[in-house]
Structure formats: C-alpha cells, structure tokens
Length: 233
Image 1 (cartoon, rainbow, N blue to C red):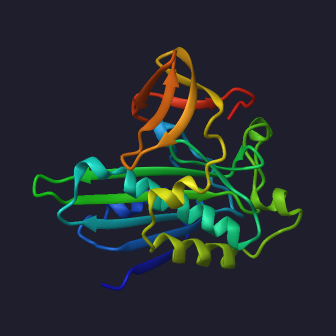
Image 2: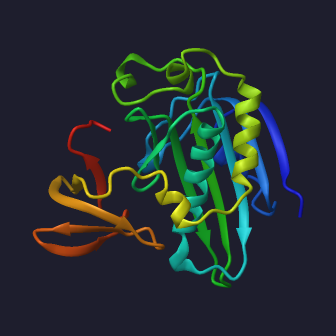
C-alpha cells in the first residue's frame, strides 16, 4: 500500500494528528511548526519553525511484541542516514538519542498500541533540529544541523530525505554502526540511583549488555537510562 503523506503548516502535535485517524494505515504527517510538541515522559518539545517535524503511523500484523525495539531501530537509523546524506557524522546514545558532536540533534517519541490479535499500531514522532534557533537553556545539551554545517540547509531537502529513510527497514547491526562508545565506562540512572558500568553491546531486543561489578548483565531501556561520564546529555 502506498504511504499517504500529509503536509501541514502548523499543528498541535503530529503524533496527536495521527491518533485522530487510527484507521489510516501507512500515514506520514509533517508540519512546519508544532504548538504542543511532545517528548518522552510527558516533556514538552519545542518545535519552532526551521526544524523538521514528522510522524509515521504504521500498522503491523503478526507482530512479535518482544521486538518493539525494531521500531526504535528504524527511527534512529533513518535519522542517522539523513544526517549522513548531508555529510554529518551522527552517533546514537542508547536507546534512541541521536547526537552530533556530543549534543542531541533530534527528539523521538514512539507510541505503540498493541492489539490482542498480534497487531501493533505504531506512531513514531521525530523532531529534527535543522535551521531552528534553540533556547539558551538548551544550547549546552542540544544542537542543530545548521550549527554543525555552519550554514542554513534546504529544509525541504532534509524533510524529503528523512521521509524517504523512514519508509525503510533497518537492522540492529546498522543501528550499532552509529555507536562509538562500546568498551567505555558509562553511568546507568534509574529512580535517582546511579550505577557505573562498562558498555559492551546492544542485543536485538534493545537490551544494553554491560559489565557491572565484574558481572555481565542485560539492561532494559525501560528500567534505566544511559549517561556518558563526560557529558550532560
């Protein structure tokens, strides 16, 4: 089925727009600006003009519920390949943060609705910082494509490249090709507690394989978040 693409000047949230049409399949919604952009854990996501804001809604049949990480892989690699197309060098911070020069360049919000009949309605929202100006309070932890290139980019070209990439399927090996921190000492944060660990790998289910106090463990991103020891991101 051909993917339906809707382009809007302004919307509250591209993810929320998709939810109003739950029976649509393979829908892509993009907007020049969001008035109520959403991030993870209920945070707001500033979505001023100059960025690329896209949501992809897709329905999966016979879906393996233990493999929802594959949706995250597709989102991360699509963004990374978009940045590569403009001669930028992105990295992925587990589980789904994409960085340029150690700073976050996009936000991703994935909302999955799992059905009893082994179906999954997935909405993947991506806000990519391109030419938009960042608030002063975010400049230490976030960046834009414009900042990395030293010039404005053609917004339509970036959006078209991202939409094209989001319609592809990717592997965990492609995801890991953008990881440059295996073997490093990292922090794992959960519920106000912090553990020191050595990051070793990421498996197909999205678990971080690491060494903690001499023991090899698998950590779920639902349980803990990763922090680099020399970064605030």
